[in-house]
Amino acid sequence: MKVVYFLVALLALVSSIAFAYDPSPLQDFCVATNEINGVFVNGKFCKNPKLVKAEDFFKHVDPGNTSNKLGSKVTPVAVTEIPGLNTLGISLARIDFAPKGLNPPHTHPRATEILIVVEGTLYVGFVASNQNNNTLFTKVLNKGDVFVFPIGLIHFQLNVGNGNAIAIAGLSSQNPGVITIANALFGSTPLISSEVLTKAFQVDNSIIDYLKKQFWYDNN
Image 1 (cartoon, rainbow, N blue to C red):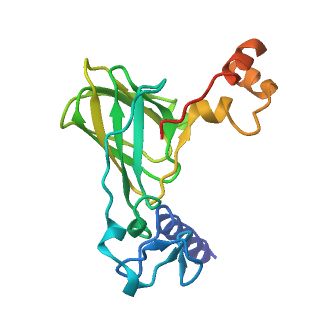
Image 2 (tube, rainbow, N blue to C red; image 1 turned 30 degrees about the horizontal axis):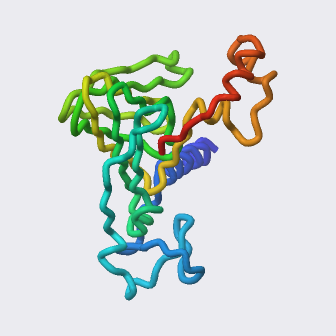
Image 3 (tube, rainbow, N blue to C red; image 1 turned 90 degrees about the vertical axis):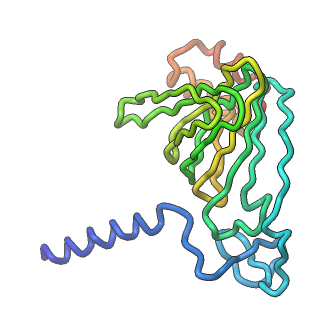
């Protein structure tokens, strides 16, 4: 019986490792297509390999427009932007910051993020989970500095320099997803009950109503 328990535990461990991230491809590439035919992999149909072109693996990324309330713009380069990323388990994003611009607290439910500062100075950080006492880890990054944000944890970047800033983020999924905390809590569709939010934040209902009436800008 002990052997059976051991085998079950081992199988659970192996399965958790195998399915923790995007599955490994079983072919050279599986370029995503909107045509409803062929093989369906990772939520996308695969283009006929004989029809694949270099353009399926290419995209030019322009600077983002930071003229918004947050003073930042995230330009994702994931499977939606480059179909050739399908099944490859990786993507990136360019993040542009105006002076004092903020990429607000958010999470990527399906990816770890590694960020390098290309220009400027950023104050960055992430918050550990409840089991680690919600510890805040922060660092001021300058040009050439690299920082890692573990999968699923709330993190942010703030431009603390005097000029513009640029960062490039690599993500361990072709489709990392993003949940902006303020938008999710106060701008969901439909709205979360004020009774839930007033108890969660231990504030007066008028404060929750005020926050719900704000225009929650999405910089992605």
